[in-house]
Image 1 (cartoon, helix red, strand yellow):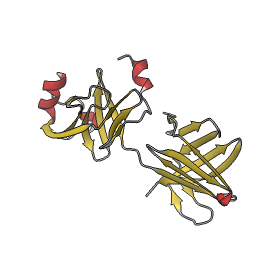
Image 2 (cartoon, rainbow, N blue to C red):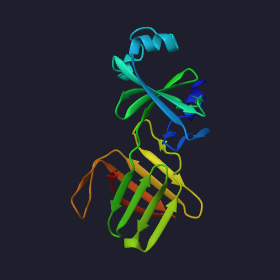
Image 3 (cartoon, helix red, strand yellow):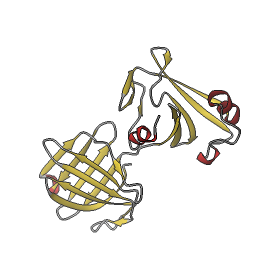
Length: 203
């Protein structure tokens, strides 16, 4: 895989559920999952011809959990068909000569005031924006997030019946009404109108 092809996967989403395994280019209905705990160095040497100590910088423990995904009783050969666990919310996905690092998505909620609004991003479902204290509602599919590698800011831009852009910046924010602290600052543009507020993981 070329560096350009690898970069195309940046920011993409992999979903592994009991009903479906899904990435942007492949899916499997009713997948199977088989986790195995193996010694890191001997596994990497046998499977990928990597020397001892390889990938240690990724934070792999000495014994790693390898999750093999199957489809129809045979290994699923798409991106995400095998995961190597780093910790609870991080894993490596080896595919086509590249080890991609994955992190678990959290559903996201943001709020703002004057006028009051609420945004929810539910991964695998949709983006929901309620504005003007409930007077207007916009629901869109979740577009691919564009991530600014310099600042860590993420942008979701959905077009269609409504034009909805969500900018999530990793800067602390305090809600003007409740005084509650959040870990991100959020700017939303809906059909040309801007809303400002704060957000964080959805409980």
